[in-house]
Image 1: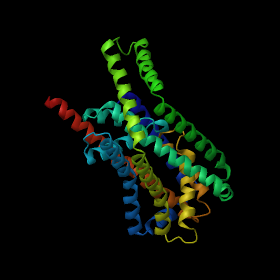
Image 2 (image 1 turned 90 degrees about the horizontal axis):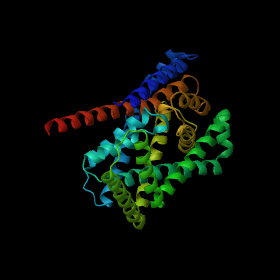
Image 3 (image 1 turned 30 degrees about the vertical axis):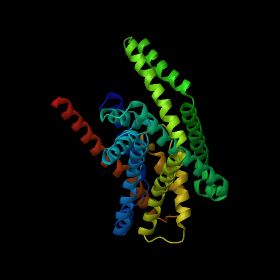
Image 4 (image 1 turned 120 degrees about the vertical axis):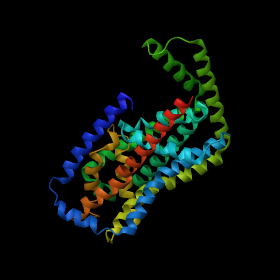
Length: 341
């Protein structure tokens, strides 16, 4: 693991410890444990499957887009890229570490850098676009109830939505402007040369320009196949909704009634939108605090902390552990390949 990622992992662990302290403080953990024990096993298993689906779905979309660009891709390897991306996104601020590592492994597997870049950018763009559309829809049709649930955290919802809108705009601009992308690639190389990280190389510059041209060709190809993009968007909507539906499964598994599935999913979506772009590894701490405020009217007493522990445990920590195992497997497999050569 690189030094930067190691530092991020240490920060994540520290935030986890602080988060645990916040959860324990002021709560009857005996009552919380009893509430967790009362959780219906069938609902718990279903929620775990839904959590895994969230990552698997991204892998399927990567595989689908690679095939659309006439790349031979293995479905299980693509699902592996998704798990590796989740792990490095989870330990880096604003989830910035995932895509570079995914691109690295995709290149090692023989995929063109240009095609891999386009695929990952399309997945990220559609992912954020769906989140923005959901956020705007909630703001437009559910504004008053949303303020009642989020209370003092409403400003974070606006901030999270604004940051996602800005990111979607930047991604769209880079994708539809080939000259901009080429300048970014060449400019990045020049910066690294000025910092003496890279040595001057005309051959490398030619390859980077060629990659930028191939990137533009891939963007144009996907632009002419709008149906494939539409299908990826439908898949992303299902993927997004799955993680919100997970909370409803925990709600029902704890024997709760009175709130509709739509309400629970909207409240969970609002928490996700608010913390998605915050510069904290895994949005640690703030997610838990905001959850306790937003769901205070939905989960009574000890069930509030219990539901938060289970929900957060499944949609982040459980997936982080599984993703870490996959990332280690990729790293070990990569070393073996190098040694065999």
